[in-house]
Image (tube, rainbow, N blue to C red; front, side, top):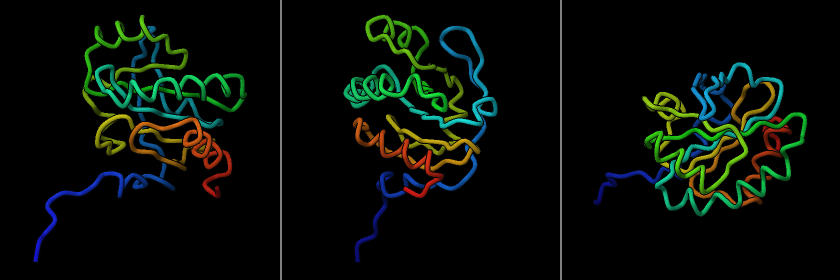
Length: 158
């Protein structure tokens, strides 16, 4: 008999669905503070990423297209949380890759740990009541992101 010593994190990427979002209070690249409690009342897309992650770089065009399609939706907020990266590397990345949504630093990895992330990129959608309704491990396509958004807007019914 062979025992499995590892676990594929994609098999457990829905561990937070149906549960309250872990609270986070983080500093943004533009010197503001973002508090997850202040985001209630609308749908929030949270994307964990970093500048050196190849799948994160591959995902960037899809995130941009998705954001552009929804940036004017009155119930929509998107937050990128930087995991395992230096502030200088992130700022340099953002100069070359302008990113119009909120970008926040997670210097002690508290938010990443509270979400139970395995790596990056990982994306979560949160409904207006602060409940996690969808999650995706790995680089998400526009179609993946649209599905997550619909699920959050439908309260997890999609």
